[in-house]
Amino acid sequence: MVLPSMHTRQPMDSRKLFFFVMYSIIVGSLMTGCLSYRVIKAVEGRSVPNTFAEFSVGTTTLQEALQTLGAPDQVAELEGKDVLIYRQSLLTNKGLSFGIPFSEIWGQSFDFSAYGELVRYDMVVLSFTPDGILSEIASEKGSHYPYLKTMLSEMQ
Amino acid sequence: MECFHREKGDITLKRLREPLCILLLVFFLQSCAGWVKNRDYHPFDAAKLDKLTVGKSTVAEVTDMLGAPSTIVKLSNGNAYIYRRSLSKGTGLWLLILIFGNYEKRYDQVVIFFDKKNIMTHYGVTLDAHKAAYGLP
Image 1: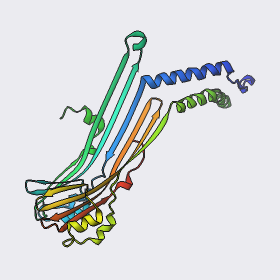
Image 2 (image 1 turned 90 degrees about the vertical axis):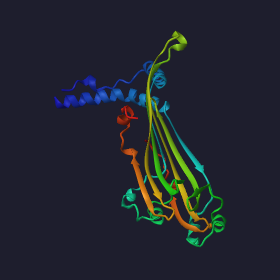
Image 3 (image 1 turned 45 degrees about the vertical axis):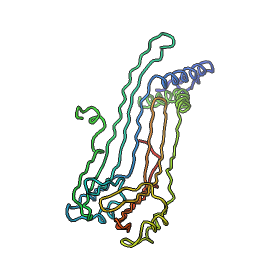
Image 4 (image 1 turned 120 degrees about the vertical axis):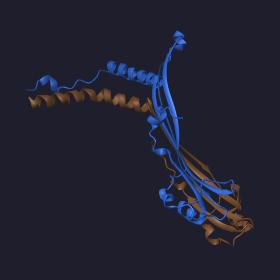
């Protein structure tokens, strides 16, 4: 059963439309000033290849490491050994903010905010003897750690 | 009965079309997007490395071909000359109350190892800068 009156579409009259537009703009403007949620990510460097897992201490040479992993991000000398560092950093910044800026009118205002920034590293450190033979490998896969769990963790 | 529900739904949709369009318009008027590109440029040509010979080429030949290095590091058995340049691309998007930002920085790097006699012993190349991309988090 269909009522005949339900077929007729009633457009907004111009007065209602004007108020609706103004109301939407004002509410939209206030919302942008009062409530915001942000997600920012920054990545520096390339992802560290897993091929270093095939390296073995005492046999892998500097030339093999350079051929497999490419140019390192950092080179240093440490206690008579040459150290190559491959690194990628991943920054995640998240924030939630809610506030009502009444301070100009009232002298008081409400503001609730929570921000957090986490930088994680994927890193491989290779140490070579002066003869160019691998003597130590150290690695870290920071990107595996989840954002919230890591942020809320008590661990330093 | 089914027909009645469908008709009712159509009418509700028609009534909502105008306000929804306005809300969508306001949403986009309050939004904006931005892009950023940064380049840390050093004009070395990694292709010229093919002309260099491990165990033979000297520091002078390398610097003639590639120019001055970005960094020189003293090592246990010589020095490392590092040539580096970077390309960064960033994207920002503001959608009313949501803010998204993404920034990616990649490098082109050439590291050349020299012994104490200034003879090239090894080298490593990573050409990755072109992989920097705009995007969302």
